[in-house]
Image 1 (cartoon, rainbow over the protein chains, first blue to last red):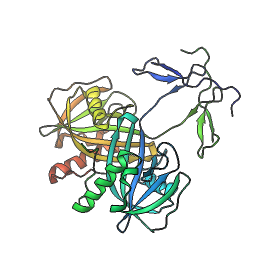
Image 2: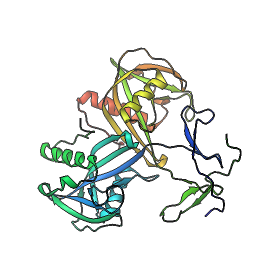
Image 3: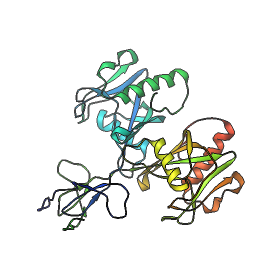
Length: 173
Length: 173
């Protein structure tokens, strides 16, 4: 680690030639440009059951979620969704298509949620999960879901299965 | 501006507790996490003509593009696409739906391109455009488009108009 630890980008100011205030480090002058982040995830199905993960990490520890996380640099979004399914649930998946794009401007997030099939039903909790499980539709723990967008994705996945359409969904009204 | 200018995040190393190398400032210890960026844009139509902008900035100065740019913090993607249409072409638009999601992992970009209608045909070059123009389909300057994804979006927009479908497109094969 470096010997001199500065204050980091703690100064909120408009850099010369810019139009918006950015975080600037008063010690080193570094400008920390911040951009919205991309979350990739998937609704993963084995026969009639859907994969959920019980979170081992904050926020919402102990609540159920889809395998999902931040897209990495130089990663395509379907590859990122498959990586997250492996990391969080040791699940091998085959991506079918783009289920939904959710705007979460409050958190500066855009979520891309895929429809996917499990290649095998063998799953296991990764380091960020307390447990992982395949749920039939009427077993889904609706009251213990981690985030509103998990419910949106499950509901919209179910609608798409019922109607057979392949429309990419958006935030519900 | 700060008095002491450090070297910035020039050290590429794996921070303690992390799994990937990140850029770290050797003077202040700041970790510059980098994430893929979201580009938002729109294919904007007035009657049978489509809005293109000739770029005043690098890269690809002088070539034609769709109004598009980086999503800002706390901005929803349709709002970002409308903001870019205003900034680059002084165009007021009404978003119809999500035309396409393109993965550009080489550039760590995800592009969300909307279908939109111009509310009025009055347009003008913003500071990042040399000129702006409404093109009939057979007038589009195919050999002078700025980026491959501009051609993808125009072609896929045209397909969708012809078929009347509202499927969200992906990178062409």
